[in-house]
Length: 246
Image (tube, rainbow, N blue to C red):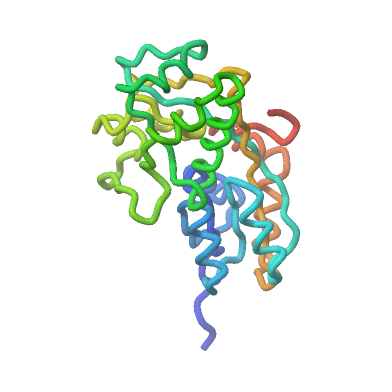
């Protein structure tokens, strides 16, 4: 007797959970998904977990798998951007954001570098801040709290958005995260605010997709749908940027 077919073994960045669910339902391909921080997922795949397709929030992690063998070339399939998520009492605006982040009594949250690309992108924001205000990089490094994306990061109650939950718990006054994450948090708690970064601090995120050489045909069919106009429209509805724009 043949073993029962399982869903497509998709390993994907946590920021893709909602949109990947809709994409798979639309194209009619069942998923057996694993979501999490892209760096941690790459480590698991490299250690032998049977991913058929890996959708990462950066290009570095899928490129590492491709270069090691067993995976095809990396394709950019969407883009995101870093923004600030703030509570209703935080008065930061795009123009005052750096000043507010540097204030000693402001709790600044970020994700975990290396484990989660969102944390690496936050470090890029700090680097850019140093060009605007010398010394800002060291000050931001020293105060930033790594609240998400790590192997030991706190988990929200079931059914809660982690970013809305962290803000409710007052773990941060300003939290650097993806625009799409901020939109999901604001959907759960409309009192939260998304503050775009000023031009001098703005950081964009390219998301990369890679398919295992041993993957079933469904993996390539799913990737093709993600990249076509219908898939791109679904990504755009979830707040991601298309391949032709930033």
